[in-house]
Image (tube, rainbow, N blue to C red; front, side, top):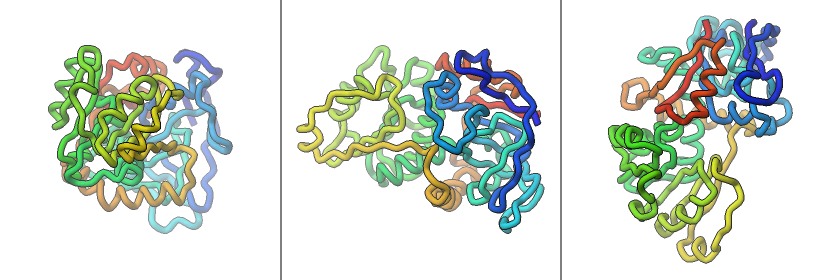
Length: 321
């Protein structure tokens, strides 16, 4: 099979097409002929050598989310058949013509979505559900904020927060065009280049942050009493100074997570929650994937360059022919 491989750490030019064996299917797995794969910032970090890959995970073929057609099923698999159209979250290996996945991690592709749209869902749906609704415990009637509103995570978080009854949804973005887009989704947005979000938003119950750095204390300031701050990345830095009195005085909860290294039972539980609570909203069109650009597998480097430019609104995707 063709696979887009990291030949060494560096810029996008280190991504090269190579021939690799089609992976063997284990008893509890399915083999997927990949139709589309999503690009994520973690892919860029891994390509640069800035992300230590957990042991046992494919390290040189990127790709955390795919959609496609099941080509073979393992001996223990009873819930899927050859020919089923699915999408799934992976620990790696998605930038390729074939990939294996645990059968319990597969979700049936809704008829109203293309393979491109379906492949855009896993990383953001799993991340948002696990961190906003499970860890952050967002409830109907509460206020929610996410930084980076036009990222895949941001767009997913805005839509799901509204669909599950958040009273207000706030976000930060880097341009007026991105601000207008988030407002079209129903969020209240600020352009962080011209406005200070701390001066605009001051009553947040749950916040999802990917920025870190000097946003940390601003985040604490805008949270309500009993507020929850959830970290999934820290693009402006992981080390911060903290006034513990703020956390104590407001009785704040500060937490965070990394999804990739979690075990299959944990991810399987999220899969079941998504099937029950989110996929009906996808199937009836209330939740809409947002695709910014689609590249052929052979142009994965260009897709990475676009990701690093931060000019996109929505997901950047690869199509595998």
